[in-house]
Image 1: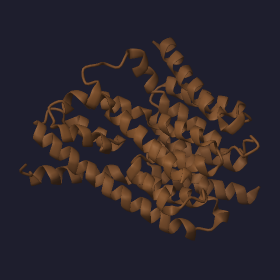
Image 2: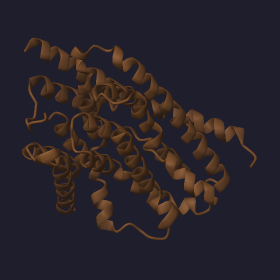
Image 3: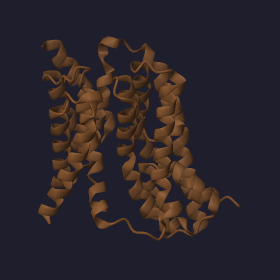
Image 4: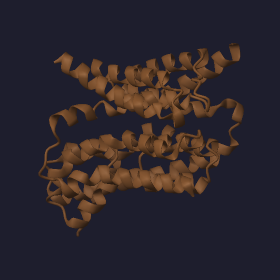
Amino acid sequence: MTDFIAIAVVGLGTYLGRSVFILALANRRIPDTVMVALQFVAPAVLAALIVALLTDGDGNVGIGAPEVAAFVVGGGVAAKTRNHVYTLFAGMAVYWIVRAVF
Amino acid sequence: MSVDRTIIKRAIVDALPLYVPAVPFALVIGLAVVEAGMNPFVGWSSSWLIFGGAAQLTVISLLGSGVAVVAAITAALVVNARHVMYSAALAPKFQSQPRWMRWFGPYLLIDQLFALVSLRLDDDPKVWRQYYLAAGFTFWTLWMFTTAVGLVIGPIIPEEWNLGFAVPILFIGLIVVGIDKSSKLVAALVGAGVTYLAAGMPSRSGLLVGAVVGILAGTVAERLRR
């Protein structure tokens, strides 16, 4: 039940974010400083999330050779192809290989 | 309202190729639900309640990893904060739409739809609306279906494969594809670095600290760049 409520709250918040200017503030402009800050939300949050997802319950960050190798190769493939399918396959393949070797 | 078939067809043809990059996200959401030990229907509900892959993955994987519920919700909302920009950019075009469209349209407003409809701002309001709804429903229908497929194949995949690691890999891909200037790289590196240093904070609140400091660092770097 907690899971469902959490998801519903995120859903509501997401809708509010998508609709706020369309429904309520059509004639307002977003202040320039906010516009500048908004473009850094995605890179900053996604990068922070990666670290958070690799952190265990005791606050230890589990980043070893397999993870680093996968990030480097996955990131390289993403930069070169801009294709998430290739990125996923390359990153996971390297992760499994390095994990098997070490 | 008479429906213009050529517009509808055009919208679907435009939407399909843009959906391809979303497929791995849809499948990994299914895996994340399984890995989080979440009720599959509840997990899948995120597809129609949230309708946004990165935020769905964020809230599902964080809830599964024992993060405080409030932190999981906040992180997912911050991930979706970029939609405010889309809302602001399309607000003028929406003013010529009927009330029901102004209420319903934003529900469908994902990255790909924004990319498509912002290219057609000169369309007549009715044409634009039909294009918007047709493309939006194409994405929506595919998303409901592929996330359900992810839930079905999720439990079949052996745990030793550790496919949960697909989530950070996909996020790396999103970051790399989105970085078009040095200040965004600064935001990502500082966001990750501060979260790492703050990893010991209670209930994983380090994530939010890292995100906020990363956004500030990007803003400062942008100022210095100009």
